[in-house]
Image (cartoon, rainbow, N blue to C red; front, top):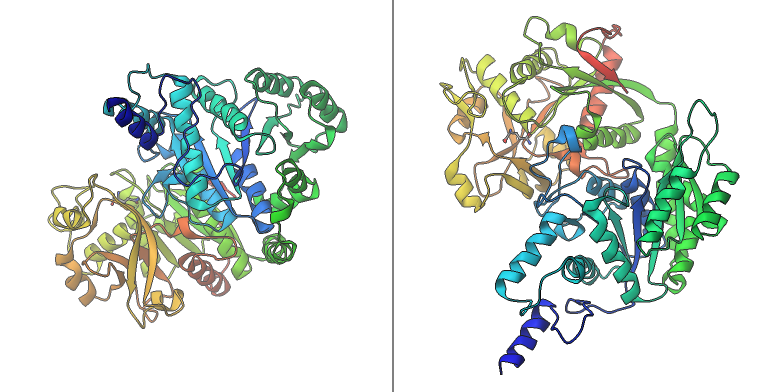
Amino acid sequence: MIMQKAEQMLAAVGATSDDTEFYAPMPAGYRPGRTKYVVVVGTVMSGLGKGIFSSSLAKCMQDKGLTVAPIKLEGYLNIDSGTLNPYRHGEVFVLDDGMETDMDLGTYERMLDQNLSRLNFATSGQIFARVLEKERRGSYLGRDVQMIPHVTGEVKTKLRELAVATAADVVFVEIGGTVGDVENAYYIEAMRELAFEEGPNSCAFVALTYIISPPMLGEQKSKAAQLGIKSLLGSGIQPQIIACRGKDVITRKVREKLALYSNVPIENVFSMHDCESIYLIPEMLRGAGLDRTVVELLRLEDRLQPEAEARAREAWNGFVQRIRATRRQVRIGIIGKYTSVRDSYASIIQALDHAGAAAEAQVSIEWVDCTDITDDNAADYLRGLHGIIVPGGFGVRGAEGKIACIRHARENRLPYLGICYGFQMAVIEFARNVCGLAGANSTEIDPETPYPVIDILPEQKQIEGLGGNMRLGGRDVEIRPGTLAAELFGGVRETRLRFRHRYEVDPRYIETLESRGLVFSGKAPDYPIMQILELPRGVHPYFVGTQAHPEFQSRPLRPQPMFLGLVRAAMDFAAVSEQVPARTDAGRVCTS
Ligand code: GLN
């Protein structure tokens, strides 16, 4: 009886009894052989663009009519990326289901034009938490819980769950870090086990490596790459494809050496040299035949749809041509406090790129450090810009500089887009300078403010039913008809945006703010949570803010409307304003 119960428990949790050393947990509904796996690992060093590579390859497969599902396996012990410092780790990307992830998930969503979920993201913290939870439930039935097979088993389960949930033809697994790191060693081992269990032609391993080219030698050297791949071979994994990163095209000589040392046919050793835009990479991979190699390795020939591929390539190439064409220049300033770290604003940069391609404008971004900006010098700092963005942010530092920039934009008809914190700062600026609420502020910045126009509203948090205190993920937004927002979103009454915030407009001030001309054109359907603000067209050509993060939803072929609106308004501004040269000294950190 007890044994029977134990067997049932085992079946339910995918655990194993001590009769066997095999441990291949299969979630309900998993059909072995249905889903194939492409596993991308990095060698030599991190930062090679594994996410860009993997998403580009996934796009090539998706274009062929295959269903693809990416997953990023992160080595760190955090449960999600929410607590990571974006200036150290890049931006925190928020998925529709509220999961806070690594910025690579943004790359996948953009490349694949596909919303992802928590199924597409794992950290060591999550994996271990699941194992420990099972251990406490007694699910391992007296077994000593081990890295192999239990932790690795949890990784395989995560991949197979994704396969079941998405009915994917191909799951793309990106392993964070570099082969040889202690923290991802068990991921590599899990992939070896997966390939063994799934059988021949079910997993393709791609080693992304880096070819060094020391300036004093003036030639490419393959040794570091060889050693990296050796280490992968030592883990029991034979890559079928090697993609070589490097500044210039990787020479045949180097590729031959790698082929010889790692048992990979020369045709499968590709040059993945730098190119001017990440959006060129899918065509670059196709040009090198990498897509066909994967199809052959995984025996996917029968599932392809060639007509779909032709259509997808045509649409994509149109976009690529637009980004490469010569276009009218507009300068958009991004006002921040640590503006030199580009990765922390990755999605905003991308959203401006997409909008620029659609509006036929070449958007050059100028990073404006707001730490020393005041009402008196804001005009100097912003001179020559055609539009500004105040992006998301936390804490006190730099807030007054941002408010001064917003005031300048509002009073001088300079196009403005406020994102999350930038929305809140716009409310504060309007409350102070238009409604006469001197000292108005957010309680995040000044808990003693006489006018807490932005505040934490505990009763609303209760309504939202959040365990933590961040409002996270996709939420519906009701759009007020006849507003600029309605126009931007093409006349729809409701849209969906992504959020990541703790503070919001205190509803007690809505009437005062609106009576003086601020328009809340988007709000939560059932609660007084203000989500979009604007000034009427007659007052200002483009003054828009949103409590959301619209940058997370911009896609190459579907630019986000608020960014598109900003770029178009900036083009108009550029056309009418005198072209005063931009300041080149203090304030501007760098130009792209
Ligand atoms: N700090 C603000 C809040 O918590 C804004 C957050 C953000 O910009 N993401 O509400």
